[in-house]
Length: 298
Ligand SMILES: [Fe+2]
Image 1 (cartoon, protein in one colour):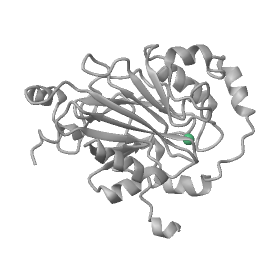
Image 2 (tube, helix red, strand yellow):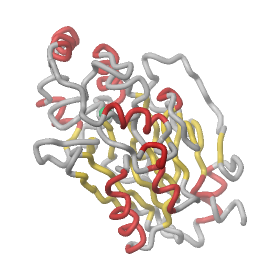
Image 3 (cartoon, protein in one colour):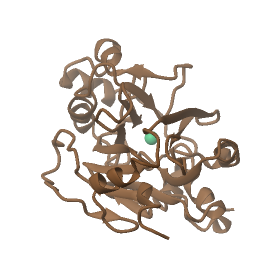
Image 4 (cartoon, helix red, strand yellow):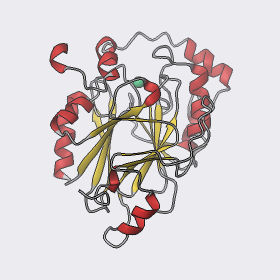
């Protein structure tokens, strides 16, 4: 199998840097990791330009109604292999999602999680059981298991498209936001998959799993509100029927994150929420990125 054919599996570090993350002093500067070697992107792009169309993003927003979770299917359908990834798959809807992948003729290569969820079990383990070639992805700072542990500034390629990893802790210590690439060959406007760091007119709670209202405020302002105002924001949940928002909209209308930090912290400290029903099952399972012995849990 040639390296060229599988260049869509490359995961590179730092070809384009997001803003520095306020809670990390990491300064990585070179490509570090690839499943099939660390071929620089510029070389593979040049080699492919004669056989592939321009990158073309397919995006599907999928919903799991018990936990009100959104799963996102992304693919580069301009690429001959139509490489695809699922962001935040849920165990209960894996069959639906994989049927859609098949019907659309996509090649699923990654199952990503934005964080260790407390309200549902990730579908990652089930997906890997059904499609062993798929690689699981989560942040290194989540302390969860996965095939690929990503860090702030990494780029995750699928075909000639990529997602940039931005550390956005605060809801949990390991939350990341995945942002479509910056560049003329990448989707415009940009899109960000925010997990629970930013919800539409809301945000994730900060009272467990290493959460911190101070960190969440800094994360959203430095890593999400710093994106262009027309950036489309896709959260991991919605409980009111919204599907998408923009940076500009949330900077104007988010009832929590438009406040000063002190007011924000006071709001977050007084939510008085009960713990999610699924938490005792979901967190241990998701720390294993859904790869736990499923039989042992039944
Ligand atoms: Fe969450």
